[in-house]
Length: 125
Image 1: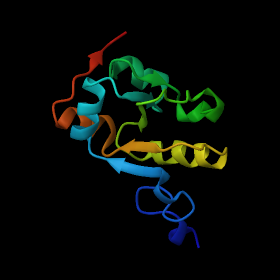
Image 2: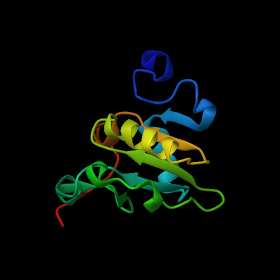
Image 3: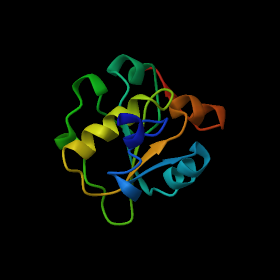
Image 4: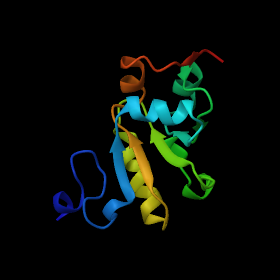
């Protein structure tokens, strides 16, 4: 039954309908550069301190609380990322289980995908 509800990326394939999408980092970078995203990083604090995307809010999966996720203002998209694109699926499932009503975008390949396509990061604290 679970295999019918979740695709290979952990995103709901039935209950969430069109609410969840996995988007490539090149597209997300365009949105980010245009100021069109609320970016949530669900990696752990030490990972975020070592390297991060400027402006991302760090809400580690180990203590993830859906109530702490800000509702994006009009014209912005909620984008969740992690290191490789797996943990953001777990965070997405937690948001959906908590009744999140808006769309959720997961960054394909996570921070690894972002940097592979030239996305800028900030290193160190």
